[in-house]
Length: 361
Image (cartoon, rainbow, N blue to C red):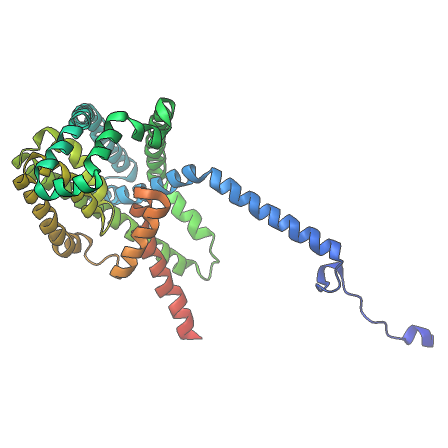
């Protein structure tokens, strides 16, 4: 071997192992711009698909909330397909009966409530304190003009065409949510197996435990919320009939039920709406409604919900408030509904994964 052959040559770095300094500025700039444009494009796509993603997330959460009823039937000896068909039949039957029995009544009461709203506002002027405030700020006059002129419809929906589009979009969202919920409910075991399979084999038992805990917490929360909302609606319906608001009781109960999904502040909004209408009937009716909402809110917070949820969520109150406000700000009532089980799931991951990893290190 010649001496020239014995000279060691410095190893050349392969293109895959080149450092940042060894790459050309054009290469760096092109890669950075391409990555930035890709990220911007993905964000734009997600923004366009936001409504679809919300429907998918809500449908999955509702399926997890209905699944405990399916498992309850399975524990009674029914096979999953039969239990699933039974629950689906009950859900569809309840929805059909609700649409046939409730929607015409709610529509009629809502129309009457809208038509009589200016008269209720004028009746508030009989109260001396409210009349004094109205003379100073003309609050009732502005609200009356807003309702009677119909400008609030243009502001909310952009005119008659916008209102029609809003109704069509709402109907489409409801149908899609129902279909997706039934689909997720039927394929929930397969969805769980797909999630388990994405984890490495060594970590699969832990992933299975965490996923089952998250699914159980979400399902228990939503199942419990159905009970909470039902109690709020039934109690409000009885009180409103007793104080003389029977002609609007069903329509207002829908509002109370929707607000009951929003933790902490939902009952306050419902109390303000019902109280305003009740005070226009009589001061006594308004006072009774406000007292009922305040007393039952305390009973709901300290007796009803602790018994229904039985500590399954284990979420600090401050995180409940922050989660509800954040979810409501981002996605409205749907966001407030999904916020609490989402916070509970993230808190579970924090306690079971991050804290234990830090304890071992």
